[in-house]
Image (tube, rainbow, N blue to C red):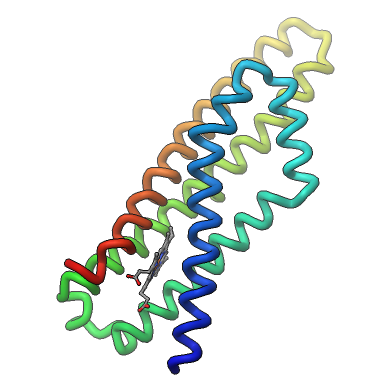
Length: 171
Ligand code: HEM
């Protein structure tokens, strides 16, 4: 049990910092730094995709959530109600729920919206029809707004999860 806890904690904390840290860096530094140069942004995103960064982050998030669930299972003696009535149990549970919500916004809403926006941007550049261009530009704008809001929500819930995990033992 002791060895399993050590391995689970290593997997949990390393994968979680990679996922949440990348989200913070991307949202607050990378995207604003490239926002004024869409062509450079496209090149950087294409290269990151080629290096499988988005797949790696999905795996990191999956590992953080699965190892977290197993840790919660062990700590709460198979999800017993009395554990969640304590400040520590309650705070780990709130943090865990926030992390799951962050993953849904990140991989279920923001990422698909940005992938579709990328495809539409490519069609827009290639299109010669003015009416089609106007429609595509509208759709692109809608998808970008949706992606940006979902990414901000994902990062906010990620921060909430990390903060809850950081203080859970002391409340
Ligand atoms: C954003 C994602 C997450 C981050 C950044 C994160 C971070 C952390 C950190 C830093 C600790 C160590 C806290 C300490 O030892 O005092 C921890 C522990 C823990 N986390 Fe998470 N976590 C995340 C997601 C989750 C999820 C999804 C769950 C469960 C559903 C979970 C359940 C737990 C549990 C039960 C512990 C205590 C482990 C033990 O007894 O040693 N975490 N987490």
